[in-house]
Image (tube, rainbow, N blue to C red; front, side, top):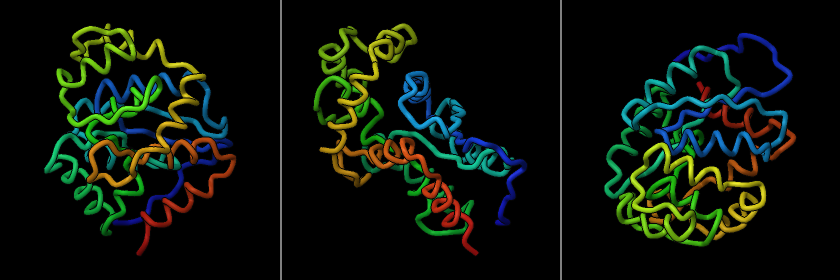
Length: 212
């Protein structure tokens, strides 16, 4: 695959986040609105509306040259992680390289709610099923019978604050970062990157994506 060239020079680093679905999109939108990350980064969010749409959305955003970096935010779902592994394989194939998908995917195993709940308490989810996780959501956010409906998402994310963002950052340090381990996430790495006043991490990722 040929390397892309930047289409223009921007004072800010433009980062596109391909979000798997509504939960991921709404959560990132809330964090973006809080202003908890370094102002040098300009985030654009894209709702893929399903994990099956992620690879095509990623390829489109990567190739159009409007962004300094394109990332993905998604669930692993449950073992054997077939859809998640398919996303990784397609990203690797697109770049013509092995294992580079790990550079651009922000994951929650088994689901994004694993990260969201850390704003309130330490918890390890065992399943991506909303029904199974509903008691935890009720305890943390007071939302009954969570099914991912818009009003329920609004009720949850309205309670995300700068203060409990800091608490989440501390709790996420306790989680494993191996995407094959239940209750894991690599979000901490990106939290640190998004807070950095240097874009060396962006240059490093892109150099790996564009190896000849």
